[in-house]
Every structure is written in C-alpha cells, then in structure tokens.
Length: 156
Image (cartoon, rainbow, N blue to C red; front, side, top):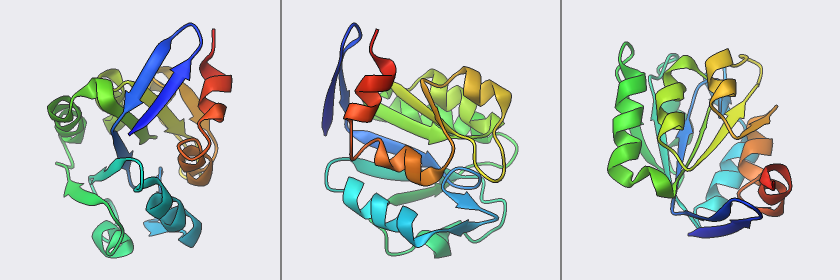
C-alpha cells in the first residue's frame, strides 16, 4: 500500500492501481518494455489491475507474465463495468489511470485519478475528471514510484 500525505488534502491510502490499456499503457495495442518494467516495480507496493475493452485484441498477450490481474470490459458498456469494478475494490483505495471516455465513471469513484495524453490522445471528459494529467504511460506509472511528484502536484 502507498500512503501519501498531501498537504491540505489529507492522507491517501492507495492499495490498488487500476489501469486502462489502450491509449493509456499502450499505443496501437503495444506496450513498451519500460512500461512493463515499471508495472513490475509498482507491484511490490500495490495490487494492479488492467481493465480494457481490448480494441486491438492483443492486450492479454502483451501483458502476459506481468504481476497484474487482467479483465476485459464490455466494448459498449465498459465505462459502467470499470466503475463497478472500482466500487467493489473500494474506490477510496484506488488510483485509476486512463485516457478514454470509458474511464470517466471509473475516475469519478476513485481516490486518485491520472489521465494520460499519449499517442492516441485523450477524451476531454477524462481530463476534466482527473487529478493529474501526464503525457506518457511512463510518466503516469513513475508517479507511483516517486510519490513526491503527486504531492508536489496536488498540494493546496
């Protein structure tokens, strides 16, 4: 678990990292080796889930062998699926990372929300419902290994 004291906001106790796949961790369905390395490092302190509508059909193969739990969501109702999943975990313990329209509801019930504007872009609503916006999956994941970045961005 990560405990992050954010001045003026209190302590965030983050047990779970919930990640979207396409456009967030991956570009055109492919996940970089650096992203995989960062996921391995984060798994030492947080339980990691990858939720995806799997647009390219290769997400499971791309992340096979990583210390994550994988779940496909409905291509038409994925936003609701992601929201329900986070609520079952206990949203107050969840850091969510995403970029798409189907990530907005998940963001709304998560304690910490990170939007990624990568090669595939990002949905405006995801940006508006995030706490932090970054420009690469690596930057998003590195936040959880160097939590002072989160503190510096979110302090009042």
